[in-house]
Image (cartoon, rainbow, N blue to C red; front, top):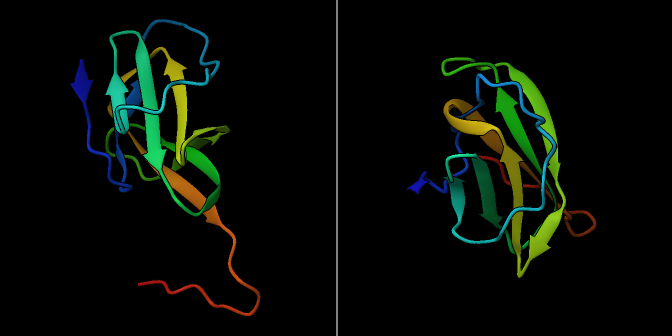
Length: 110
């Protein structure tokens, strides 16, 4: 089993060449990061404050255009997770994490 970095910057994961259903499954919360099991990829992301998480898939290994976005709806002990069958290491991905801010606060962006 191969494990990829758990950081939020884009990483490599793509649909396989075989026509398989990309229907998402709940996945498992551990290990954190993107884990390929030979049949698909499990994504697991810890966030103490997230109200929603989306997995963003980009067009090809060098692409910066978002190809699709998948809602990550499963959550276990502050770990958001999803499994995408038919995916394997070779395309960029990233996360869009939504958080609720207290009324009147402005998010710090650096």
